[in-house]
Image 1 (tube, rainbow, N blue to C red):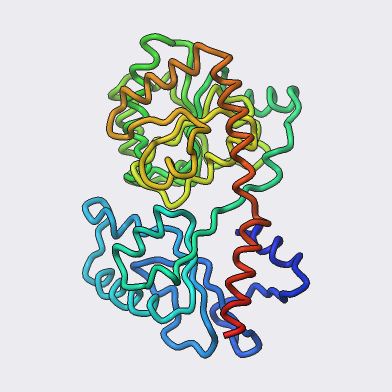
Image 2: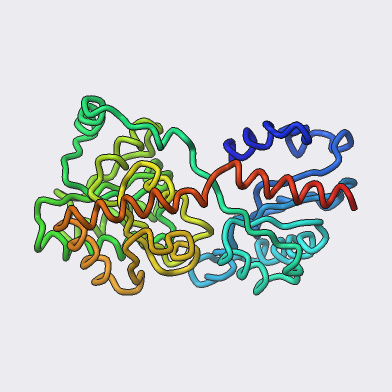
Amino acid sequence: MNGLVEALKTFTELSISVISTKDSFDPYDIIHFPYFDPFFLTIPLRRKRPTVVTVHDLIPIDDPVHFKKGFRGSIIWKIQKRLLTSVQAVCTDSESSKQAIIRNTTVRSSRIHVIYLGVNDEFRKPVSEAEKSHLLKSHNIHSPFLLYVGDINYNKNVNGLLMAFKAVIQSRPDVSLVLTGPGFSESSIELESLKTLITELNLTECVRIIKYVPIVTLKALYQSALAYIQPSFREGFGLPVVEAWASRCPVIASKASSVGEITGDAGIVVDPDNPKTITNAVLKIAGNDKIREKMIKKGLDRLGLFSWRKAALKLQDIYQIIKSG
């Protein structure tokens, strides 16, 4: 969210400060909480100032089978829901997330504002061929490769991606798969389970797991990949899709949840419940440079919808409406 804060600071009509929840709210006209967790108290019980809250998604509520509340979480969710109805505005990242808020809370639709995320301008800057070669070599990554960036929660559908990739290498044994992101950086039950699946599918030699990398390496990965794949069952937004477009990387994306909404026709859309559609999409894009170029162009065209300045302008309007009354 640093990009949004920096964009807001360029508006002379606003004075923006980033503070802690431990700081006094008294000097400020409006307090904006940029994060909401249904199972933790992220909104203070008592507030003396008009409040805006950003709810990125309610995936844990929409999928109770894979995201257990527990007794304490159930109690806190009831409190958080009540607190959410008392704020002046709720911001969210996609129409899909707005509908989730409407389904699961009593917040009025008129108070929920969809503000698409922007993309860090760094992703638009090319990495030199020499530097790309060095960075990929340092991580033992060889082209051609597919790329996934993100977490490994159930909603991300990385298992489905692996099953689809198993079928890909039957036709294209030269293609590898690179997995990176926060979920791959620390040991966890989910990561160990994923590694077990990779072994069971005999993919050890062609799947490369690397810890979350600095932005220059991430840029090199996007800019060198055959395609970026976002196979999620559910997302609040799907920021790596936009990062891939900015990096001139073609996208294969799930039709589900916000991913389909964000992608539009600027990617090859697949069914996350059907790994075969992912396999077919990969083989289609891997075997046809014209399709790759077409998808890259469509991604660059759609990229204009997603900028921190546009997000900041919408947010400024919300602040001004609240302040005026």
